[in-house]
Image 1 (cartoon, chains in turn blue, purple):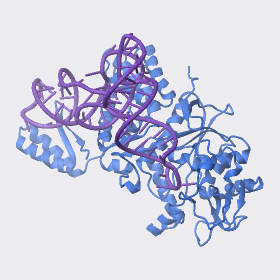
Image 2: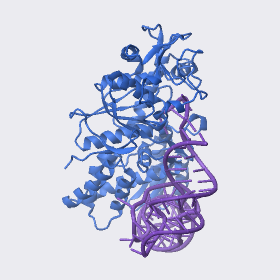
Image 3: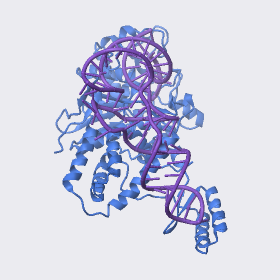
Image 4: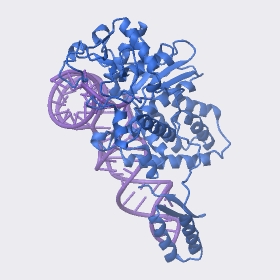
Length: 466
RNA sequence: GGUCGGAUGGCCGAGAGGCGAGGCUCGGGACUGCAAAUCCCGCUACACGGGUUCAAAUCCCGUUCCGACCUCCA
C-alpha cells in the first residue's frame, strides 16, 4: 500500500515531478542551510520546515532518506560585497568569528527542535570543508570552467556552461552589467556574470586559508556544490531552498556541480516561497523580524507557528500575523484536549480510519497540499457520524506527517510559588463564597499573566497570550 | 521595463464547473455568584466588463488594482 510517489513542483521543469531514488537505495536530499551570523527568523524557519515535511512524507511512504544541510559559517558576503557576514557580526559583538558561528548554529538547532523539525543526517560546516571546495575548484580550473583572475581570485566562467539559466529563466545575454555585481577590481573578471569561487584574502586576516592560489576564503556558491556532491556521492535527488536562492545561488551551484561531474547533478529543484509578516516581507530592513523565541515569550506554543505554516501551501506566499498565530495556538490546544477524550473510546472501525488516513496521505503526496489535509482534520473533528475512536486513530496516525505533537497533553509552563499561593487562596475564598476576595485575587493573577476560569470541578488556569 | 502570482463577507482565508470550507471579530442565547472557557443560533462574499455552459468564485478574453522576484536574502 505504501508505494505511492511524492509529487513535488520542480522549479527547473516547472512541473510536478515524482521524488525518486536514483540509486534504488535511498533518496538523497540536500537543503541550503542557514548563514549563522544571527538568529534565524520565522521566515527562514518556513523554508527549513519544507525539508522536514518532505522527509517525513518520504519516510512514511517507505523510502530511506539521506538528508544533508549545510551550515554557512564563512564566505557569505554582506550587501556591499566587502565584508563577510560572520566577520561583521563578530566585530559587532566583539567576539571571535568562529565563536559567533557556533553560538548561532546552536541556537538554530534549538529553534528547529521547537518546531519539531527533525534533524538532518549531517550538518557540514563550510569552514570545515575547505579542502573539499579547493579540490572542486582545481577540477573546474583543469576543465577550463574556471580561471585565476588578475586580482588573485578564482572565477567561474559563466559562458563555459551552456545550460546556464535553466532554473531561474535568466539567460546570460539578458543579464546585463549595471546591476549590483559582485565587487572586483577592474578587469579581473572576464565576463560580468562570472562569480568568485575563491576569494583572495587581501586585507582580511581572519577566516582565511592557504590555497594553490594564495591565502583566501571560498565564495558562497561553491560550498553547496562541494558538500552536496561529497556527502551525497555525486548525485542529488532533491535540492531544497528558499525561492530567493533560485538566482543566483542555485543557478551558479548547478553550473559548478554539472561541470564537475559532466552531467545533471540534481534531479529536482524545489523552492519554498517567502513569508510575509503583517503584509510585508519579513526582513531586517522592513523591521518586522519575528523569532521563534519571540513566540515563546508571548506564551504561544511554537508548534502554533508550524500549524500556521501548514495552513498554507509551501510554494505560495503567506502572510503571518499575531492573530493567526493565536488562532492556531487555540486550535492546537483544543485538538489536544479532544484527542485525550477520543482516546478513551475503544470502538473504531479500522477500515473507515484507514480510508480517512489514506485521503490525508494523498493530500501530502500531492505536492504537500497541507491546507487541504488540515481541512480534512477540521471536518473530521466536527463530524457527528464518525466515532471518537476512529477520530483518535486518524489524528494519531497522520500526526506522523503533520508533526504537531497532537497526542501530547496540553502542557503548561510551571507557576511561580507566588502565583501558586494566590491560586490556593482564591480556591479557598470561592469555596467559602467570598466572591469579592476571589475577584480581587483573580485581578492579581491577571497582572502576573495568568487567567483563571471556574468550571464545575473547580478553577483552572492558563497563561495569557499577549 | 521583464517574469510570476493574486483580488472572496467586518477581518483573515480555503475553494476541485453543480450543497455558501474554516477561523477570528461582532450580535443573540444556554451555562455561570460574576468573568472566562465551552456549546447553540445569527450575519454571508466572490475586483470590473464581456464570453463559453443547462449551470461559473471556479474555464476563456479584456480591463483595473495589488504583491513578490529580476546579482543582500529563507
